[in-house]
Length: 577
Image (cartoon, rainbow, N blue to C red; front, side, top):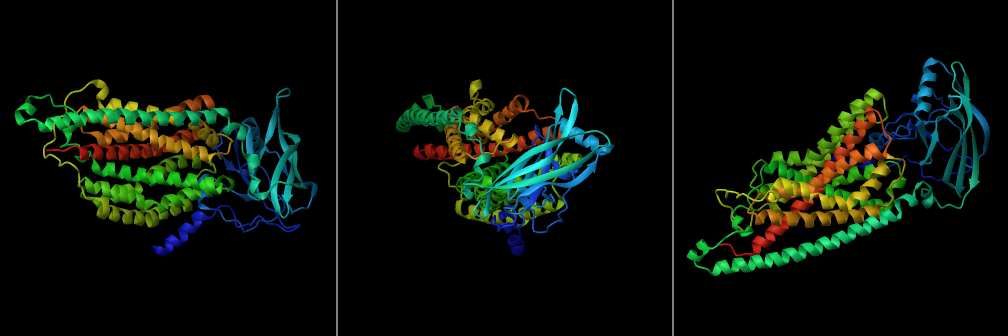
């Protein structure tokens, strides 16, 4: 097993090929052709040479190695065959020719009609070009046949690449189309570490509405924290005073008194939640996801992961595997405190809950991708690699965390003893019902991240690179704070209504934020995008469901942990007879 770990983890850390981005004069520079697909369906991509394009005369090279994250993202780099040498200009040069037969003509007509774009990479810098255009007056379809590359260099490094598509050729049956290219090198003052800045869109991400939304969310946090502190402290002070009076009464006065409130359920409030095995697995998985998000966002801020192809996903996979003990610790300790007996079953469920959710969604979408012959289809070897990570890395680390959690924090030392017979739950007003509390609990947390969701969706589903991870970190912390505050209030109201089912209610009330996010994704799909087709629709709603479930796990876990601390605090302060 140790050998497998040593083999798998380095694969996750590799991003891009082994090139060091330093060139000598006239040294070979490789142009990689990646994918092609409709402009409005960013995720629907196909291999570049699935269209009847042709390669240049240059033979294949063997120094490129695809990483796990690139395979999962649908990257399909193939050598272009174009000869490009560092600082060596090339005039207009033909490199291949095709004759339009019936099949190739239909493929190119479909690509032009659906606004197909293609992507290339040169020294890890992305380049985009359009396949062709439609002449409305003539109702004719044209394809661009000439690629003009302008490459900027600073010293012995490439810092800029621009592509100009020229040379229209009409798409007609039997036409012979010749593809050409030219390369010109220009000295640039752009520093190598700043070469990715041209792909960023500061006017979009640093718009005043973005700053205003952050400020608005921050003010909401201050207001909520102050409100929760003021209301609960004043209310709890009155509760403590009333309960202290009751302690001084004799038995007859206490029996004649009007007893009500959260103290009355002290014998049931620490009763194990329904389905403790599932509940503890959800809490463990949510705690791990919360830590993964924090670490990946911090790494993205410090290391600018968006500049390296596949590095964000590679980092996320590695961090998720490395933090598996956190899952085991939180889930295992909670299950032990709930007097769970099947701890091995709980460990397996906790370890594979998130991976099975992700892999299940990807597996279903993979069938559609295979049917469409899209590059998003995950190769069988990649599936085996992911399975090995789950079995030989995540599971053993989860076991370590479970054992530590059961031994260090698994003792059920509750402030109150649990009654043998559950107390009947009295009738209460409709707005105190758990279902109503759950539905209302996610509104404020969703409001705090509403604007940021738009920027995240736009970067993932449109052609924008998300780079403001400082904003994301701040919004994530605001979300966690708002979620804890709202859930504590919901838990207090529920307990004050003498309903002790606070565990699932606190979890689901916080997790309901994800339901509002998923509903918002419907609005975004129909009103903010021009996506179409079975593949893109399934891909969008499938992965948005997975994103929303993950967000629900994080919010639900944070909400439960905050409520748990609150419950322990108030019941540990009051003297219980």
